Image 1 (cartoon, helix red, strand yellow):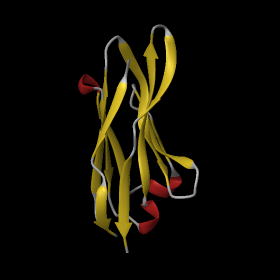
Image 2: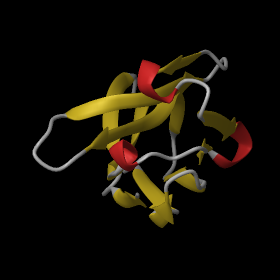
Image 3: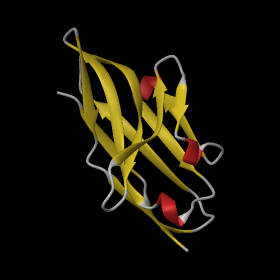
Image 4: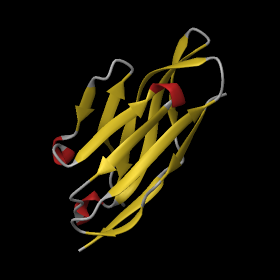
Length: 119
């Protein structure tokens, strides 16, 4: 069994910064990609950014130049540094991982962490 454990998030004023982290725990797996999605109230869950095991990234246009994803492969952990936050960044942020386990690929989600940006 694989679990994603998120930390970070909270309340910040517009223009401020927050850092999220997500660690994958378990055994017998390898990570193909990890990243973050977000879901604002009443809206669908949307991509924020993903990073593959080789370091390729895919950012949503709305966060390019403001958010930075990084990873620690040894710790199976990804970090999301969020700068110049805007009220429209307010959402529940979900960690995502595509994991190789028992010769199959599986998608996993964290429970979510709330980010609220006040104007």
